[in-house]
Amino acid sequence: ACSDSGSDKPAAAAADKPAAASTLEAAKAAGKIRIGYANEAPFAYMDSKEAKVTGESVEIARVVLKRMGIDEVEGVLTEFGSLIPGLQAKRFDIIAAGMYVTPERCQQVAFSNPTYGVGQAFLVKQGNPKNLHSYEDVVKNPDAKLGVVVGAIEGEYASKSKVPPAQVVVFPDAVSALSGVQAGRADAYAATALTVNDLMGKTSAASGLQKAEPFTDPVIDGKNVRGYGAYAFRSDDKAFADAFNAELAKFIGTEEHQKLVAPFGFTSEELPKGVTAAQLCAGQ
Ligand SMILES: CC1=N[C@H](C(=O)O)[C@@H](O)CN1
Image 1 (cartoon, rainbow, N blue to C red):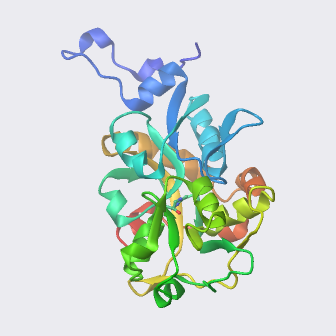
Image 2 (image 1 turned 45 degrees about the vertical axis):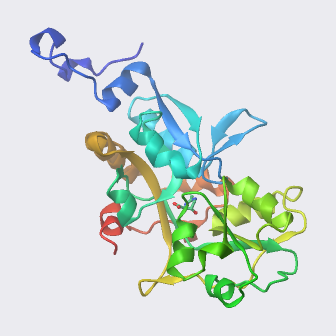
């Protein structure tokens, strides 16, 4: 009802081919947009008490999209490994899951600039019985099993750290990875440090578990890994991604941003500090 931006649009009748509205135009007209997420707190998850999708990625998206004239977001749940295929199949229009910008993924989707940067952690049984403090520790112990979520970067970290595939156990999502560690199907669940912090914060769910400390991040291609999470758009929605990015740039690093994400466990340590999608796509 509040479409006030029509003045710059050419009259539809003037076009000689039927104008397929862009994703951005369609979302503005509908006042809503579908976002894909993979139920991983604190990035994007269903808050069952409030019956709404929330998390760092979702709440920042809400602010930015509202400023772009899109008031409502509708969450579409999928596995992490199905986020990019789901975006491409138009099941949703933005991936809002804290997905890291990597050169491989940049071949498939258009990323916004990142909203945060973070290292890795292992969720293990209390007392860390297999003494796992790095991916290398998993390599050193052929009996150790490492849990990863399907499609998540940790599978790649494991293979690049030379963890034998037989030692890797793939789970559909973070919550089942946690259960897998509790049940002894994996000795560690490898995830972002923020994911592990969040799971450990839910005392009832995480009973008998702990974060492995200390922890050494894997060194890949000569660099200590730090993951930078962002939004992903279809490659042909580049104009949408650019418009989103322009609004996002006005928000990231502000006090309002930090207040919004603090309840999800994000501190000034996790600010992206000027790292851009272009740099990350180029493998820098
Ligand atoms: C938020 C998140 N980021 C990583 C990734 O992008 O693959 C994985 O740790 C899965 N979850």
